[in-house]
Image (cartoon, rainbow, N blue to C red; front, side):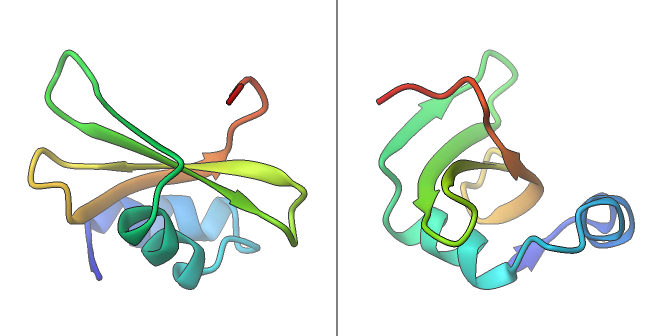
Length: 76
């Protein structure tokens, strides 16, 4: 899985509970995928361990992870 420096240095530091396997799952098998106005792509996946949906944001290539966080407002 490709990641940005921001993801490695900021996101994983602030949210150490996030597992890279979860991000990979979101990229492989998202419940929903949406393109943002800036071209970045949002991927959602339900994580049983968290009991919540995880939003993973990638760069325009759809492969490089920029951000990941539990999305409290996501509705199926």
